[in-house]
Image: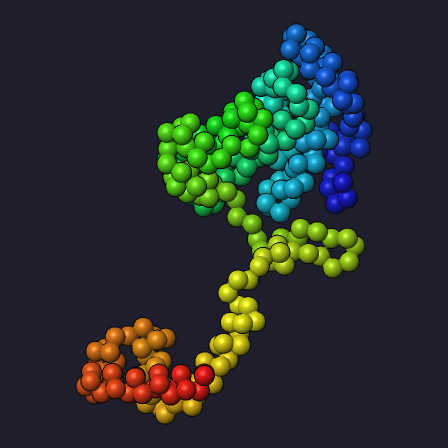
Length: 258
């Protein structure tokens, strides 16, 4: 927990207890039976889980205390909704609940305004996803979520993208004590490949071999996206002349690129 405050919301994180799987199961049965003491013990025993998730959102710019409190709300919701008949550990069920609660908080407090209808659709999609995961014990597809709530797949995708917090390309994702690895280092550039780079150099070389008027026409036609009529008007020549010069320039460029 290096780099984080020892005390969060009045809780000393160094003194947080740990609950073993067997004890966790027994406490959950007691909670379902209505024992308040077991509930308090179980919550305290899972605060480390909340803290580990909160650390993932350190780059969000939000106060750590606030995120920790929101994460605790998500954990409590997970306790209230956990089905003991499911053959899964509580943490497996709780983690997406906690993350979802924090993400909802971040998007609701975002400086980018998202329409209420998009927020409602995104919330329905998220809660439906959680419900289907609980029911089928697997990640539902967008199609399954869309069918469940009666919304098109496209609308769901748009809504979820609208409420997803933006991530900086320079957000650190790994550091082993040496150089830091950032998000931008993990993004593949499909456009500026070596092949494209060489092709662009060859294209620039071909254009440089044209006459001044031919270069001017090629630039206006294919870089400024003007029509032959617009080019003719700007150069005060006929459209037929533009067409002839353009064809000649393209022929010369093709010859150089061959």
